[in-house]
Image (cartoon, rainbow, N blue to C red; front, side):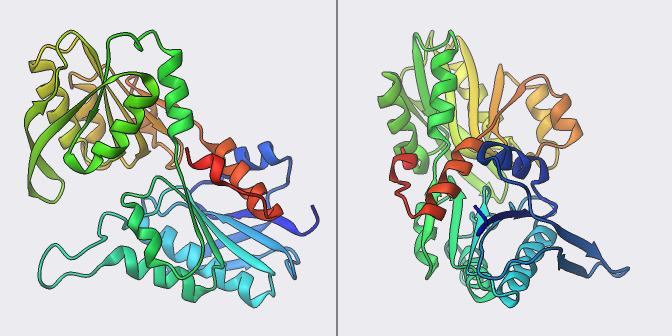
Length: 313
């Protein structure tokens, strides 16, 4: 595939290598440097004229550095006459800021979409957007993949699928949890919570029967883990046998790892859309599943012009 090349910045180098291994394609050469004041410099080490370019870069911590890296790489490829540029963002940062929740606040998810488009991206591939409506912020095609096939397979392979209940941590995630429960033949429960401030929420009650069951809390991301731990405590208080959590994006900021280690959670299952830091890797409750084959399949189908619809479910 002479007209097909994958590049990556500093956010997901190991993930990008897994994708390249799946595709049996080499990783393109690019240098990401910084001036002494922190200004980022990009240099592409090979000819990309008329090639189909895929840039793998999550906007994970450090969020702003990784976002600027991605924008500069897109601009560099555009100015190097690449045929098509696809931003592959396993984790789309700023996705939580997708609407106005107060009178004078930005819609940051929309601004990031505009930045990517103006920089020169022709297509976007991402995973488990915080809100699927974010696809409408783009004026370019967006493939929003789901980690569900990988996560469902993991649950089926455990010995916990009997007496199983899938729990949504809030009303907004009920549709996702319902889809999982249907495919697993499991029960459904929902946590009623009230958010008091950003990154702070209070779990109020469990709607549904969890007594004597193996509960899996399903969410798109885990950040400070405050909501997750309160949800786990509420479920255990209702007589659940075990509580596990399963999330696509392990942001794990602040005291998240310590909270998880000391919590009533038996395990936290995440994917590798965001690389774990050393503290997270050392936590024996956190298990990582790879979605690199799923992303690799989306890349090759996009390159060939084949349908990616079957990857959405």
